[in-house]
Image (cartoon, rainbow, N blue to C red; front, side, top):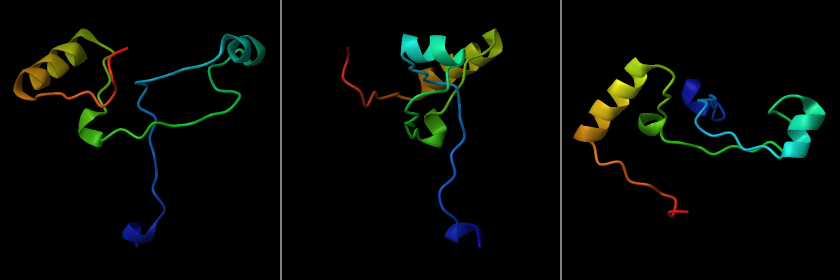
Amino acid sequence: MRQELDPRYRENGSIYAVETAVLERESCRVGGDVGLHVMPKPLSLEIDTPEDLALVEAIGRETEFQSSVADV
């Protein structure tokens, strides 16, 4: 049953962090120690086009987005 499966994750393209040395060595953003940050699905939004931006802005006007990370 689906409910008994281990959790599955989907890359959403929101955050990528890679050391310069890994990027130069691998010629790819994936390399070295790979980790993940689990995001709630409703906040897992990608902005790739002007239409995506307009949609996220509209959602933002109707929703109070709260950051779980302290301001840097």
